[in-house]
Image (cartoon, rainbow, N blue to C red; front, top):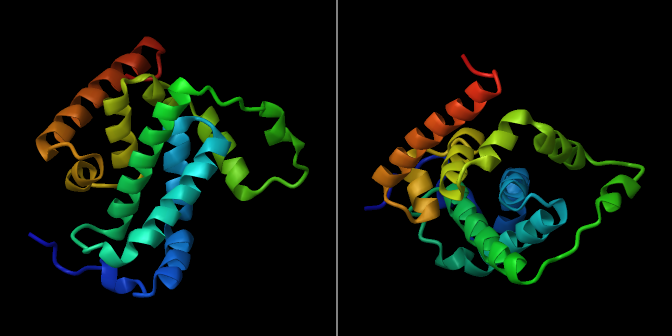
Length: 183
């Protein structure tokens, strides 16, 4: 059953893929980059995945049926691209040079945001959760997706998403309680 047209539906975007791509990048570029960074933990890999997400979206825009919001569709592409990259990363260790981040005299706003994101204590604990738990926490709280949208993006049943979200909150509370950060 298709969702009723709303502010996030396909009709808000141009039918021409190159124009739609430009609008996607403006509206969702930061969100997709943050999602990739959250999954991969490496800025350069996240940038590569973000580019790949928008290339995939460009290639498949005309076949997108609009059964989910564009944000959910792009998030699903990002999750799958990250999962693909993680599979490659496990077999082909890709070196990252931390000095590359420091070499730029002019740091962009995105660089600053990524650095703050990496240093956030709560994200450290979220990242320590098993993957299926930190995934739902991130998508729910940081991307503001509902459980139905998370289910669509991850391919898990909505009940499973709700269960994972509940258990993730419990585990996160336990981690924070151990550190004296929760009441």
